[in-house]
Structure formats: C-alpha cells, structure tokens
Length: 454
Image (cartoon, rainbow, N blue to C red; front, side, top):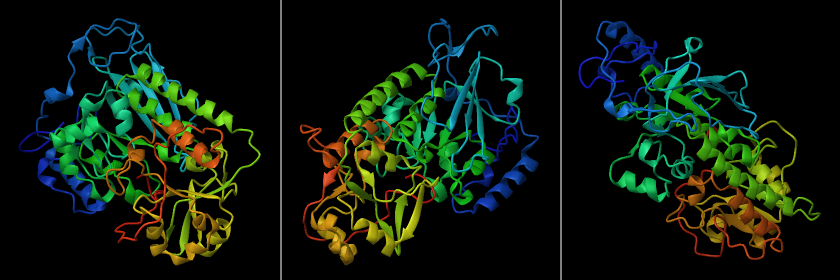
C-alpha cells in the first residue's frame, strides 16, 4: 500500500518492505542502486504510520454458499472448518507447478525447469480469513485479487477468456496487443503500460496500487525485476510458462493465473476444451510415416537460434506430424549453433515456419542474407510467418493467443505439413510468404527470446 504524500511505512502488517515515496522516480537507476535506496528507505521510514488500504483494493464482504469459490468478495464470517475453495485446479501436463489446498488458503509451488533450485512459493489466502502461520517470510497474496498487472505479452488472450479484463490495471507492453476488449481499456486510459525488464517503470506500478504483479521468471538476474519490485512494496509472482516442454503444459498456465482470482472452474472449462481439441488433432497425424523436415526462426549475427528438445515449439512441430531439423536430445529450451552448421541442416528442410513477422515477403528475407537463396525450402517458397491478421508488422494476434489457441496453431501446422489431413482448414496464424519488393526492416529479433519471454 502507498501513502499519497509524505513517507510510506517501512513494513506492512505482514512484514513486507515498503519504500518512502521520495526515492522515486527510479526508472533510470541501476538495480543495485535501487536496492540500496530500499535499505535506506527501511532505515528512515520505520516510525511513520501506515497508510490505509486503498478502497479499490478491497472486496465487499460476501456470503459464502459452499458450492463455488468466491470470485468477487471476502468471507464475512470465517469458519476454520470450512473449505473455501470447493472448485480446485488440476495440473496434469506441467511438471513445474503444484497447488495444495488448505481450507482457507492455497499453497502454490513453482519449480523452474531451467533452475530447479530457484523454487517460488506463494500463499494465496482467501480475503476475510487469517494469514496462515507457516506463510511467514513467503509471498502472501489476498485472493481473489481485485486489480493486477501482467507484464508478458502472452497474457491478454487468457485475461479476456477468463473475464478478468475489468480487473487489469497494467500491461508490460501494449505494442503487440490485439485483444479488442483490452485495447478499448487502454484507449480509455484504464490500463497503463508499465514496461518490462530494463524498461520497468516502478513509479507507474506503484501508482496503480495493484494487488498483484505477474512478472516473468528468468534465470538471468539482470532480466528479473522481482526483487526490485518487492523492495518497493509491490506483491510479485513469477510465471514460467515459456520454460514448458509441451504446448499443453504451456497452456496449462491458464489455470495458474486463475488461482489468484478463485476462477479455477472457468479455467478448467477453458483448458479442457483446448486439451481435447489439441489431442484429437495430434492423433490424426500421430502415425504418419512421411514427416517433413521443418526449420524455424532466424539467426543472430553468426549463430542460428535453435529450439532444444525441451522446448514447446519443437514439440508443436512433432505433434503436427513434422520432424524438427535439429533433433538432438538436450535439456535446453533453446541454444545457438554456428550459422554454417545450421545451413547444412537447413538444406534438408521442407518447410520453414515462424519466420520473423517483420519479414513480410520473400524479398525481405533475401535482402537480409543472400545465402538463404541456395536453400531448397527458400527456392520452393515454403516459408511461413506467424502474423496472419496482423494490423502491422510485429503485431500479430499469435502473441495474445499463445496460451488460449495452441490447438489452432497445431491445426495451421498440420494443414502445412499434411494438407490432405485437413483439406478444409483455413489458416488462422500462419501466412505463406509471397514474392514482393524488399523494404527496409527495422528490427529482426527472433521470436525466440534468449533471456526471457516476448
């Protein structure tokens, strides 16, 4: 919580560090300097009375009927014998997530596949009930969250599908946003762009007084701002959906987000439909003998960005009846290979998917690297961008719907790799690149991000 003037108290009621307002603005300061300011704030702010909780953060008291989770209210009369979460999450694909239910609170554990020792634990406590004793020192979130901030570009589709649009206060970036319901709120000034990674605007995050900040986990300390945001009093949880090994495990993070809003039933209905459609499609090409070789993405200077065998995008290709052009078994989510070696493998490719969306046609591709013209996949014109329906370059609906439409992505791929299996399918995300006049390309960053998710 934040006082509007003067100083903020140094510690909240649950022992959480809060900074005085005078340490801001902080955007241009390095992380270590910001943490130093946090310590200074703790030393100077301890004797100042705590500001009251903003009214916008609190739900009214509601009568719990025992049949469904409270999604817009606090318990009016706590009973320790009652199960306040009759609707529960059921993770069946991800190996990174666990949730335990304890009557009036949920204990959520996230073990990042890229760094299993970096365990994240969150206590989600039904508002109107007491904080559990064993939550001391952990991240505690009052649920259902009323207002929140999501930093990753892949959350808007989920937010819309779960009916959380009116509770969204901030997005890390709106540059790629195509979800109409959220765009409307952005245009009305009801959703604020907060920045991500090194561009995180801490002052804006504090001004929004959100009950939760959903940020992205990174194994690289310089890309993770969790400690910085916590130091200034923002409740932060980290998502690791970009580390999953399968598309369905990635999509299952829909249920993780729903935990913070007590919307387990809605998330299960949504995900179950995705799961059933995906599995039915995968079965149609599960036994095909002819698996075309598929290459992906782009290069960076003298190295090509390659998916590891533990990457959901590589699994998407396999589930669509293709063979990824780099099939070595590795626990890595992604890695780089020398450009010359990548060209040798690419010579065998039948299709090239996930061509960067800033490349609008074949001439754009060749203008960046003439050696690509020697590849059969290029000569045959089998290049596919993922920006169908994009209103402008690098603003594709694919980003918003990454979690809610893996089954549609699968259908698009099957129609490319095995057109006889889905002869009537109309592409939704993938677009075949046609000849065209080369243009100046302002950015060619691969879809695959080295340090974190797009």
